[in-house]
Every structure is written in structure tokens, then in C-alpha cells.
Image (cartoon, rainbow, N blue to C red; front, side, top):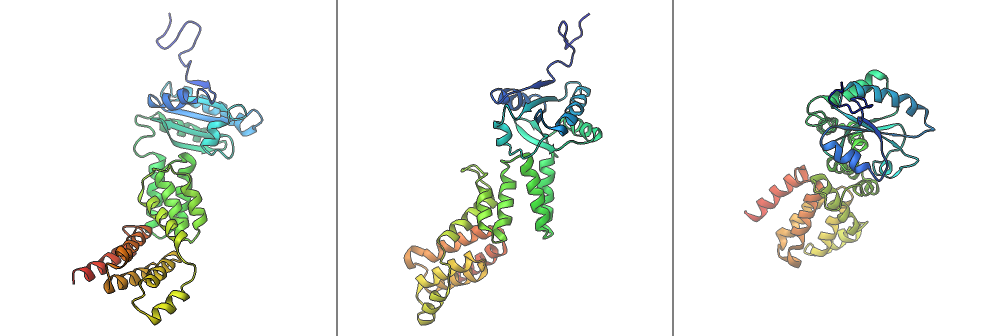
Length: 302
């Protein structure tokens, strides 16, 4: 008698484990994961730890009895998606749910940890709410609230290992570099995001980079000009740009508020527009933006 899920000469587990290629990756992994979680094992024939991990993964997937699938990718023959997912060492394992990576790890793990990884995905809703990505983003937020920049950076880095296109992690990591004064690294991180990606941190860092690109590097010239003529609005706006680019955001805001108070309409309200750029670069919920808006309101409605 043939059991349900079997065909003549094939066990019920047929189709749960398969090899794929770059050409069939979308069908075997991305599309298939919209129905059932798919674990992807990036490996190579020369990799000792891969030979250790492979049987452990297969055993755990078979034990899940169809709740998950395993797809194996030989990166020597099929490098495209390993490169896209920024695989830096193997074995590298990713779990896909609903067409996107939600969990993963690198290196060989003990059988018990492999089983726990597979079981987590096999549970109803596995990889959905409460996924490792969401948990890590929550950890990053908590670290930021505690002033632990290193902890936040580590959490964002782990998210990007799982999901290199995650906009929250990209924006958060870029923001950390920008706040540390490393604009070059901030720009490199932003390149990981799509051009149309929308996120408050991404928008803020882009504004900060644009501000830095047009800001003067020195303030002495403009300070001298203002000492001679306090109504030199061009000098005051350029001074504010230089201050903001060097991290002196509150001072930059004060200079622009002073300019607006003296002549709001100067150069098509250039000071007010520059002030809004600084608010965006600092972050809409930052102390710089909050205090600056209060000062601006007090000035305009006094």
C-alpha cells in the first residue's frame, strides 16, 4: 500500500531536501518559502565544517516532517546568491519565510542547536512575529535608549547578516557612523539601501551627508565678517553650515534663528530652509530639532 505523500519507490520525505542552482534559486527558495519555511545551506565540497553541518541539518529537517524544507547551494558552482547575501564564510545558513531571509547562522553548530533552529521555523508562524530580526532590532533600540552604541551596532550588524537589505538596520548603522563623525563609513552603509528606501534614520543620514558636502571646512572667515557686520546673512548661514557639519548643531541652529530674526525673507528664506535641513540631519525627534522648533516658534509668534 502506498502512503499519502509517497510515490512508488519514493519515501514521504522526497522533496524536502534538494540541491539548487543560481538559475532555480528564486523558484526553489524565494517562491517556495511563501508556502513553507525554506532553509538554505551555502556550502562547498572542500569545506570540512560544511560536511559536519550538512547531515545534521538534513536529519533535523526530515524530523520536522514537511514543516520546513532544505535547499543546498554549492557556492563554487553557484556564487550569485551567496554574493548577494554577503556570505563571507561557510557553512552559511539562511532561513527564508514569505520570500525573504528572517534568520540564519554561520559555521557548524552542535546537533542540539541545529534542531532548535529548525524547530523554531517549523512551529506555526515560524519566522513571523517575534522573528530574530525583530528581536535584534528591539535589542538595538534598547541599547540606544541606554546609550550603549556598541551594543546597538552589534545588533544591527547581526540583522544585516540575516537580511542585508533591512532598511531599519541600514539606517541605524549608518546613523551610528554619522554620529561618530565617520561620514565615509556612513555613506558606505547607505549604499546597501535601495535608492527609494524610506526610513527616518536613512533620511537623516542622507541629509547630514548632503549638508557636509556643501559646508565650508573653516569658520574663521565668517566669524570675522559677522564681527564687522552682524547683518551679513550669507556669512551667518555659511557659518551655520560649517558648525552643523562639524557636529555643533545647537550653535548652528542659534545662528540661523538669529538670521531669521534679523531678516526672515533674506535670499528666499534661505536661513529657514537651512534650519529645516539641520533638523532633518539631526533627526526629527532629536533635542536639536525639538529645541530648535521651540525657538523658531517663539520667534515667529512673539
